[in-house]
Image (cartoon, rainbow, N blue to C red; front, side, top):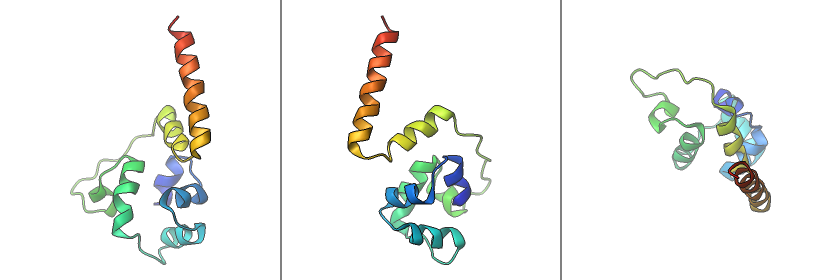
Length: 102
C-alpha cells in the first residue's frame, strides 16, 4: 500500500485522514502489523485507480500500472482537502477555464 500511496504523492497522514483513521493505524497497515478492514478496500481501490482484486493481490495477471498522470494525482489530492479549500480550487479552475475559452 505504501507504494501506491507514494505514487499519488500522499503522506500517511493524508491517506489516514481520507480513510478516517489515525496515522499510527495507517503506519500499522503499511508495516504489516495490522490488516486493512474489508470496508476500506473499495475506497482504497477507487483512490488508487485499481480493482479491489488487484489491491488484495488476487488478480490472475495484474498489469503493471504506469505512472499516474500529474493532473490526475492533483485532482485526487484536491479531493482530500477540506471542503472550503476544495471549493477555492474549483472556483480558481473555473476562472482559468472560462478565461481560456474566450
